[in-house]
Amino acid sequence: MRNGLYSIHVTLLDGRVGKGSGVILFRNGQVLGGDAYLYYTGSYTVKANTFKGEVLVQRHTTPRDNDSPLFGGPAPVGIGVTGTFTDTEATMTGTALVGKASQIFGATLRKLADID
Image (tube, rainbow, N blue to C red; front, side):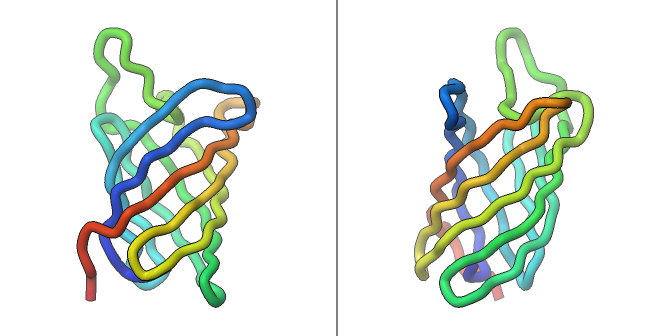
């Protein structure tokens, strides 16, 4: 994965309904990001044009009214991800362990800014 700040758009797969969007920073093997309710921290490795990693998603703000973050319960959620990338975008799939249930998702990422 190229170092940079990316937009991320997540869709649940496997017959489940749900979407989410945020920003995510990939830099030298570290992942940082977030959205209105959640923040993400983790690490990744790169081989050719593929990457894999582990991300921990944690809630920073209690959802309002009927808002329902995808992976945002009160407990942190561990996610394993894999993906492919070009210089400007990436696709990623992952599995989040939410309580005792797994949620499979897909995501598209678009580079917003380069990072040294």
